[in-house]
Length: 276
Image 1 (cartoon, rainbow, N blue to C red):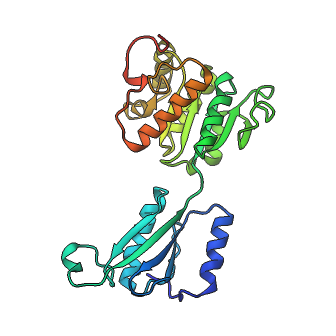
Image 2 (image 1 turned 135 degrees about the vertical axis):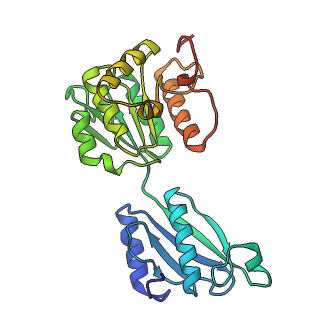
Image 3 (image 1 turned 135 degrees about the horizontal axis):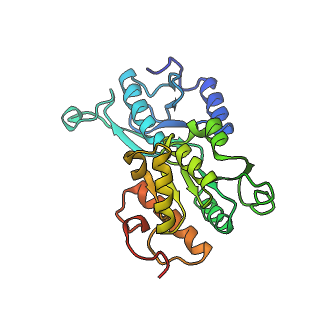
């Protein structure tokens, strides 16, 4: 599993540099304690074998497996093994410990914001603070401009369906789709497009009445109960947000809570008016 390269093989560092330059997910595993301090293993998620070696094929296999898991979660951290990749306590008795540092480099998560409305700029600003790559999308050329949303990484003048056809397959659990428009011609295809991806968060703005009407249209368009359960609408945590800035904070806080599994009160799970 180790790919047969020595730790000093320049191809490891060349590949590492290329991955960083192109935002390709990659993890560098380095022995920091035990036999072979400094040995390195480079792990990617594109199906190619790891480069380098930590000193034993089985250690390479187990460490590569764990590095992929860390990489998918965009985490870095320390792992401990036996010299031949042992992980269970009984296998580690009287065995020296090899500690490795897994340094994950994953591209920033994406947030797609549909609707160039008053709340969009505030949400884009907060999302950028949290490290998202923000794309604003609206079919109205007069509203979807870089001048209105200079903080966004990209502003697209298009309908939702072409965006999802083009790049929706790249959305994953770390990413978010926020639909801030109330126009059925735009929000229905945006919701359906998001549901056809593996995106981790789908939030839709609107009052409870607006949401009920939208749900009727979505069901008519083919959305099932599984899809309905993925929608966070009304969007955001129930913190009494009023201004665009406060609403942006409530949306991003909900995204964080959903990702970490914290049971905080979302507007979706409460009753009564959104704005008290």
